[in-house]
Every structure is written in C-alpha cells, then in structure tokens.
Amino acid sequence: MVTRNRHAVMSALAVVLALVLQGAVAAQAPGPDALASAERRYVHPTADFEIMVPAGWTLNEQTPPADLQMKTLAGDALMEITSGPTSVALDPVSYAAGWESNAVGPNKLLHRKREGHQLRVNDDQAPAYEGVYEGEGVRVKVVFVGLPDRFVVLTGVFATNDFAKGEAVFDRLVLTLRTRVSSK
Image (cartoon, rainbow, N blue to C red; front, side, top):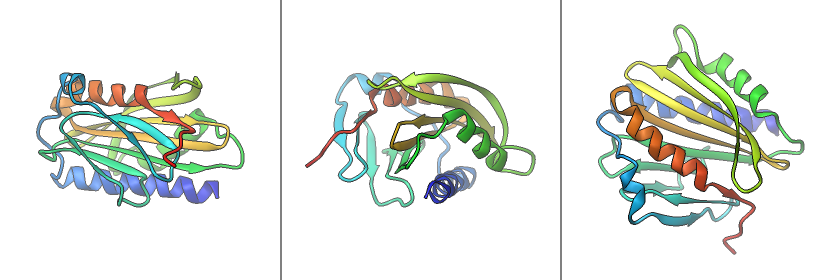
C-alpha cells in the first residue's frame, strides 16, 4: 500500500512538472497579500484534511492521484496536495530521499535540489521535510508530512522568477493544513 501511494505521489508530481515545463504554468504567482483577504476554509470530503484556500485560487478535486489541486485564476501557479493512509508512520526525511532519487538529477524534470530541511507542521507538530527543487524555468517546493496513520505531500510549482511570491503563498497554505477533520 505504501509503495503504491509513493508511486502515486511521484506520478502526480511528474504530471504537474510536465505541464509546467510545457508552459502551462509560467507567469506570475500571486503574492502573500492574496491570502490576507477572502481566504476560505476547505475541508476535503474524503481525505480527512482541511486548509485555507488563498483568494484568487481555484480548486479541483478531480485530479487523481492528487487529492486536491489549486491554481491561480490566470493558471500561472499550481499547488497540489496528495495524501494516503499508511499502516506504519513513514519518516519524511527517508521518504523525501527516495523521492529525490527518482525525481531530481541530470536528465530529470527537476535538475537540482536547492535546499532542504526538517520542520514540524500543523497542530500535531507532525514531523516533516521541506525541499526546494529547480527545473527548467521553475522552482518547486515540496513538503512531506508524516502522520501516524497518513502521509501528506504538499507541492507548489512556480516560475523561477516569481518563486519568492509563490513560496509565501505556499508556506501559508502549509501552515493552515489541519488533519483528522471530518466533513461529515
């Protein structure tokens, strides 16, 4: 089950990055001010998480294997959340290292890793690993979050020249992630 989820996460990012590299995501990401007004709460109907959606972003739940995909109205930036249940807690650092070995390097969609570090997220202070990666004309920030019974991957894809603004929006999204919620 974990291997299938890991493959699904990697496949989802590969699709996102392919779209980016083909020019589907290229112009300017909205700045953090977009979050200050008209942020709206979103509870996923089946994946047991909630976030605050930035103003000016549209949602799409029909993006398997991702649970949720968001893009700006202009289509110039993309954020995605993928999650899945696990029978054992996964280590975010080890998971990220495995993902990097498949997704980052020469002749891959992401050419290099710019930085990475461990952190804690959400009310549970869940262990997480955050990495920033670079491809042709894009920077991608990925946060791998390990929970006792679920693994969550948040991905933000932004044009390289607009990464600082996009990263601020993405970081705010990560801060609003809450798990073990119910939409029922």
